[in-house]
Length: 403
Ligand SMILES: Cc1ncc(COP(=O)(O)O)c(C=O)c1O
Image (cartoon, rainbow, N blue to C red; front, side, top):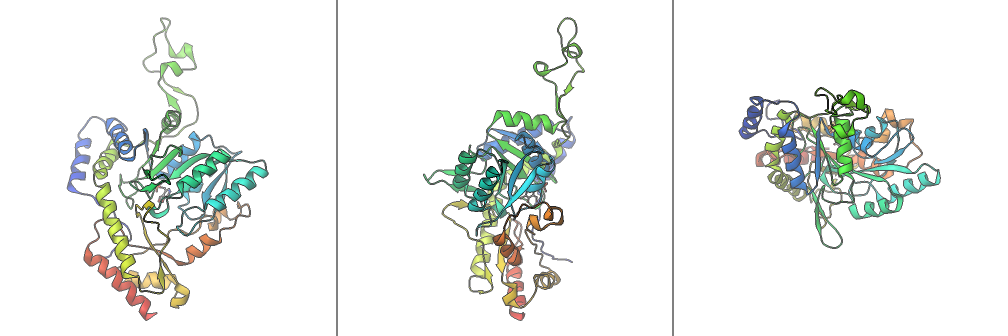
């Protein structure tokens, strides 16, 4: 349909296209200097030390789990409301996933996570890693999770696929950018087209730890090394004068080809320049929806503490009481779609997905289920015009009033 407003959309400028064209004419198109430049630029923006680009957010999470040392004997915790990749990354390695419930801010509940950590410890299966998710762009309760980490000693992976450029304020008043807090072991981003910045497909892990960075790079490229000091088969690696053989490399463990291309990195670098302006526009959009629906009794919003959290608003989520409205969410979405307005549901609770149904450990996630019944993501991306926004609000009010 012409004039269809999707819930999310990439923004590609002429400058982006020029940056990509330039790389296409250069010597390298697979991983090379532009990838490194992109990694450094993201580290500078986020206040982190090491960046490791990869093929997407899912492979970034997979690499983070490998670097964390997760294996088939381990358990990890992920929130019930997230994209399935936040949990699947541990399943790729055969580990068990325990699902924690959510808070009213729709991020992982600290209490629910604590209960799972205690239960697992009591069962003699301590949790190896916890994946917190900055859901919709809202940063979870970082200091509370840091306390849990101190107490239970897990590897902390922050799935910030929704929140690059977000921030939060600690109890001592210090403001942390996502990726800056050293208690987090690894922070993961996705550069899928609906995200804040895109590389087509793409992802990155940032970390303050050299040890994790080395491991992430090693497993990103087949578990291979070309570093002579690390070679294990000396007779194969060196000639009789002790010089390294020029063709030689070693595959020392089973890794992957999760490398990003120069083409993608050039797009990412160009997009990164607009990160802040994009977030500012997303915040305006979210504020506009709040203002316009303030007097609408059927619509509420996830809890947002504006004083504490610099929300990145990957998604603008509203909670609609469809039961009271007397219509199903499907009918509501279909009606809006027929008016050219796209919406989406983020997310079906991951433990309700068929793959996970027989793998649960008696976890309870009633908040996640209650949230799922009402949630709807409205259009939110920087190139939405004022006219588009007015159309969305008018359309929603019209459909609800007619219900
Ligand atoms: C919270 C979250 N984690 C992980 C991913 C996976 O990222 P990708 O699609 O880049 O593999 C996504 C993607 O939508 C996501 O939303």
